View 1: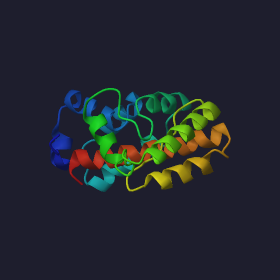
View 2 (view 1 turned 180 degrees about the vertical axis):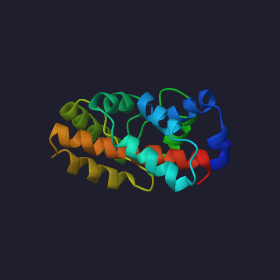
View 3 (view 1 turned 90 degrees about the vertical axis):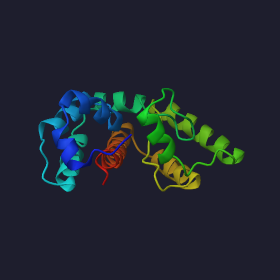
View 4 (view 1 turned 90 degrees about the horizontal axis):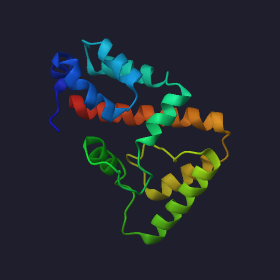
Length: 168
């Protein structure tokens, strides 16, 4: 995907930009909020608006957005921009380490059984061991607190991807 730059982002037709924004965070309300605030005077202004909109997601929107993400250590089910980004974001999980892969799978299953959805973390820059430690720590959360943590992680992922869109 070619970077749009801020000027390109501001000038792009909404119908062309909306699918790309949905690759950042698959929540129609978030996409509409980011589009509605154009034009942006700076990348920081764009990111602040996007972050604020991500922090306002409803529990239903969070659950819906989670469904589009692969488990840590797995590939996305659907090809596309989001799948490519997800693979790059999870580069700290080395598929050649069978022991780590098995531990991540077991931890993911335990998390899913406990919370009813996949474990989601902004994996960029984290090793598999760091993700395992984070996952274990989050298992102590109650479901409502954990959903707020997931919301923050979705926001981090969205902002990371949005930076790629504008080349920041």
